Image 1 (cartoon, rainbow, N blue to C red):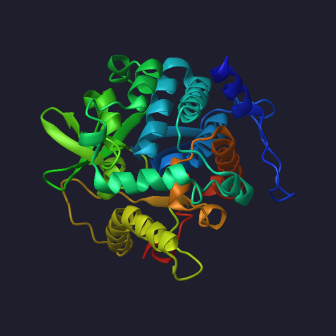
Image 2 (cartoon, rainbow, N blue to C red; image 1 turned 30 degrees about the vertical axis):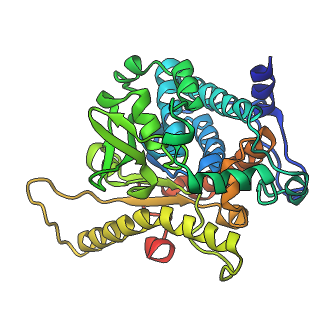
Length: 374
């Protein structure tokens, strides 16, 4: 009953207190279009804990538009969860299957939060930005995890996400997915290298490896190697989409702000900015290489005669103006109200992006890579 209620909320809820010129395009009044698919996109999905609910909203809106074909998805951490739900849902029941599975996943994540002692305080709720900065339980847990590792306080390595994933996804079936390509990034703890899991390697452990936060969970073992969250080495990586799909257009869906308005001065602000810098660094480095190669192609230079480098059109959806004031503690806030607020923002950004940029897919980049990333 609780999950069903959460699913109903996921379609019907509209957040209060936001700008009046926004209108909620729910799945109940925005039908899936029946237009023939005409544009192909690869999606690169950043990780960021609960902020991945923003990506949930973007994905739902893209899935509703049959002018868009999702050729490949590459995700890290929460982005890996979202990507897995989309791929499994598309394989099971097309676009509506992907939407339903995304709704089910986030509803179950929120349901798990109800059993946690780590909740926003009444002052956090009054602030309205999803933070838990005045939550005693959150600060106790943060201090506790600085002194003890999950190998000590969670010796059985319990992870509620495992149960959710196994409930929603048939991973043996997912390996044969033809609806889209799927790539998930994790960080090899011993070698400091990014590991990208492909469909033939897909498993619940591969997904959990991509989202393994070191101070919360044991390193995830896959085929004798041990992995932490992919955000340390690729958040998300772009190269799997470049190398393994035929699509020229890559849409990067970000959830970690690149630019902020002021220099951090408080302990919370400094910690938040360090988190953002860490989880943007790999993407910005990779985009520097992408920009270099594309400039060489524009000048008629191709380094690989046997396998010509392909022209890329880079697009991005970046909500930093909306969520840059959200602190790192909000990434652990999985209350349904907060998740749905982020989802709603995601739908709005996707709606605006489609209206302004759909015509340019396959023709040119709509993201100024040098301005945004370099």
